[in-house]
Length: 136
Image (cartoon, rainbow, N blue to C red; front, side):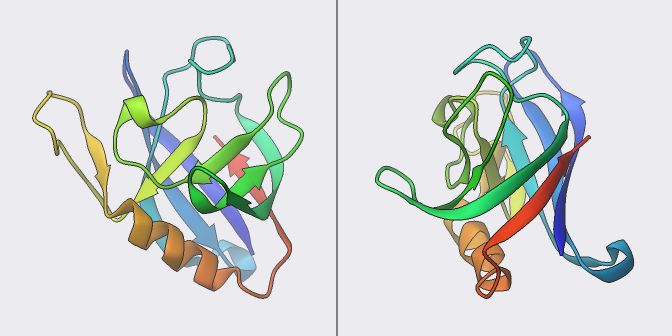
């Protein structure tokens, strides 16, 4: 199993993508929408992370609860896949949700049912210690 994040809509305040959980021969096991910050040269707390391959492990964050923690991100630390809805919930991390919608009517797309999406993702990974994440 592995995760693929396919970023498809870079915007000034955020980046929208699809978050795939892939199985054997890259068959799609599950997929969610995802939200990240825009690309701002990998600057801490204001940019999404660089495209590439990262190992992630399950983590219990004091602030966000159960999440995935990406390892060995260049010049960055504490990058999580965690629950949240809005671009302002992100400090360089990745949010996933079941679908996209402008929840707060600010003209920007948000992820919806993020807590349920994280729970679903982690249920697939319950017997796995680590997983590879590819961001493209």
